[in-house]
Amino acid sequence: MILGAGHQAGLPPNCKGTWNKPHPSNLNNRLSYLYCTMTDINQMINPFQAIIERLNGIEAAIRQFREHVAGPATPLPEIGGIELAEAVTGLSRSTLYNLTSAHQIPFYKKAKKLYFKRSELERYVLENKVYSQDELRNELRLGKGPR
Image (cartoon, rainbow, N blue to C red; front, side, top):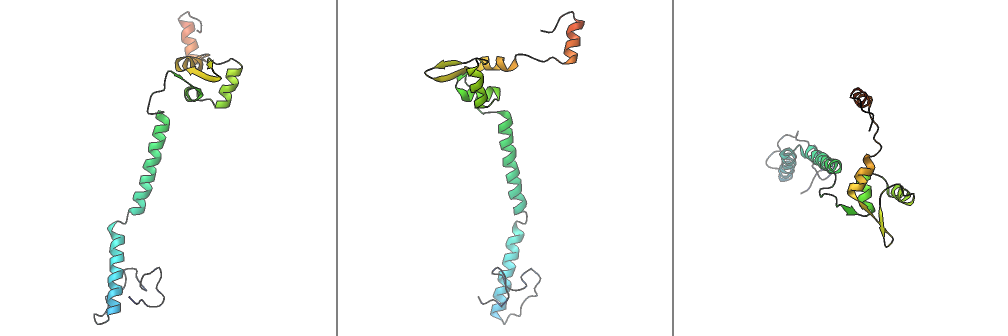
């Protein structure tokens, strides 16, 4: 197909859906008109494609966020290595190594490998509770001291 000079991106000149229908005797004009009309129709078939792609990206981000917040899909094992300790405590690997070398966190060691029990790590995380003022008032009112 011979297109007139000045066409852009492979489209005939003035191909914005605003041309007048060409005279039927000029084959080149008829083909250009047909090409332009088909391009406009293809764009009209799904004018929301960019929006759909962005929504798909947003949905994927939401899925990732939910997985991150909900935690791993499989339950954590009762006994595991440093990865288990990281998952349960939320502490970094280097902090956990420092705590184990100072014997400040419960752990087991066998053949130079560290092991942790999930229940002990959960107890470790929950020890040294800081009571709210309401909890302290309730404890004092009931005649009990803070635990």
